[in-house]
Image (cartoon, rainbow, N blue to C red; front, side, top):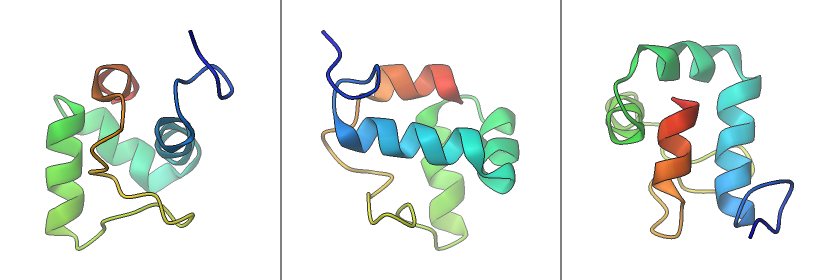
Length: 70
């Protein structure tokens, strides 16, 4: 069951929102094989969280759902 705008938790929704609505993040995500690959690329750029303060590697994120975003 989804609780937050179609997502299980706020953090997953927030990360997906940033990926879908930021041109740079969207472009990077579309080039990545998986969400894990995406956060590795972000780490190399020294980017660790959304501008709302949600960590891209938060342990509670629904990474299966985020794989579909990337």
